[in-house]
Image (cartoon, rainbow, N blue to C red; front, side, top):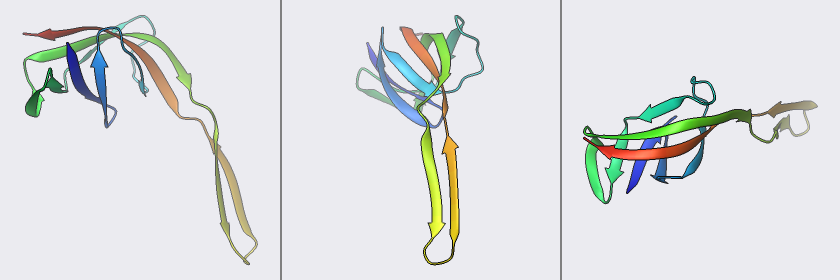
Length: 100
């Protein structure tokens, strides 16, 4: 089965066994997470969500992405600001896609 889920304001195309890097979730590593905002399953779309479908995954680990540099400046005004940012993520392994 294939599905499209929504989490963290983004949409992901998943199958059983898919590994996702999603926006940080509150569950600790090793716990199960249930995604109930399913937009589509096997080509059947919801309006906007399908109410009888859930996608279950396991939280593998938490981490931070590679650092990016945010650099602001105004030409000819001696204004320079350098700032770094590392976005937190959660690695999730999709276990099952179930229809009720």
